[in-house]
Length: 351
Ligand SMILES: NC(=O)c1ccc[n+]([C@@H]2O[C@H](COP(=O)([O-])OP(=O)(O)OC[C@H]3O[C@@H](n4cnc5c(N)ncnc54)[C@H](O)[C@@H]3O)[C@@H](O)[C@H]2O)c1
Ligand SMILES: [Zn+2]
Image (cartoon, rainbow, N blue to C red; front, side, top):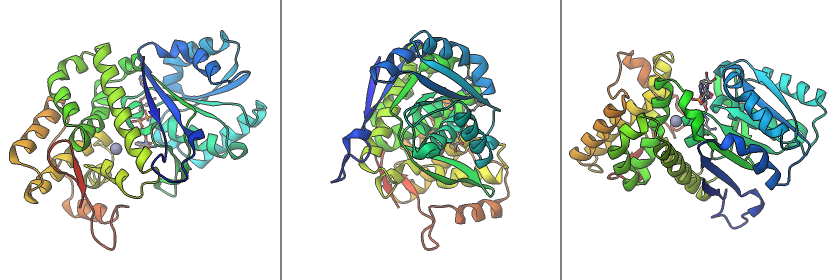
């Protein structure tokens, strides 16, 4: 089992060590959930929040592993889908938690992808002014990205993540076996963010990915553990230094300025990771024009994304709409579109 230590805000002067927590990464880890929770001092009631798809796959096993360790656990199931990241669903969950007589010490266990993580995290942060949260992410995106960093939110008024806060879990359990039931498209979509970490922060990891795509695609246990562990460590490192997105954390937006615009102007037919892959290529070309990246480095980025099976070219979307979407981006400062650009493979600049 690999352990990543997360130390939110550790570079700040008033760093509070009580928010530190571990991300545990290993195949078959779901089985250890009860033991890991007991080790943290939890006992008694726990509530699992999950969606209908993940519940069918892993709900009853997790429940069994908790009950057999003496926990009094229940499952709250919501439908699958981004639409559930809403105040309406959060409200239903508050009512259910209250009916289950959950107290301030009752941990909420988020079992699922990024939607479940963001929504359950938001509910955990606000129910009774905050109850303990345990994340059990089950998509590659959730294990490598969305469950790390404490951003929890729901969508509102047609805007993504409009209402939210920062709230860290007490523990994150990444069972890499759960990645084996993802569709190939879903898995590849998550790989875009993994490749992003290599490009902007870790050349050695980028080279590992170049050499290991076949093992990753054949869902080899060691390869899965390596990519999740390395990605989690990289993101945790950034979050440790810039918890509230005030500077350094913005480099994680590489590929996202153009990516978000492609995602929204394709009316979501291009998925997030796919759009980020296209965004990373386009932004790499911008970096090349600015002399930050060589032509051969751009070619390596394109080759890796292609080998994974991710798109690399801007799809046939309305160009005006694309530019308008970029101008509406959160990262536009005083009318200027800001980019996080690679400076060689393994480093990045905010431009
Ligand atoms: N908080 C953050 O920092 C952050 C960062 C990036 C993305 N996000 C959010 O994450 C969400 C996207 O997350 P996602 O891509 O994980 O999507 P998701 O949670 O919708 O999951 C995708 C699909 O996979 C299914 N699924 C989950 N685990 C599975 C498994 N092991 N096997 C088979 N199917 C499984 C789900 O039921 C769902 O249908 C978005 O709402 C996005 O805003 C948050
Ligand atoms: Zn992303």
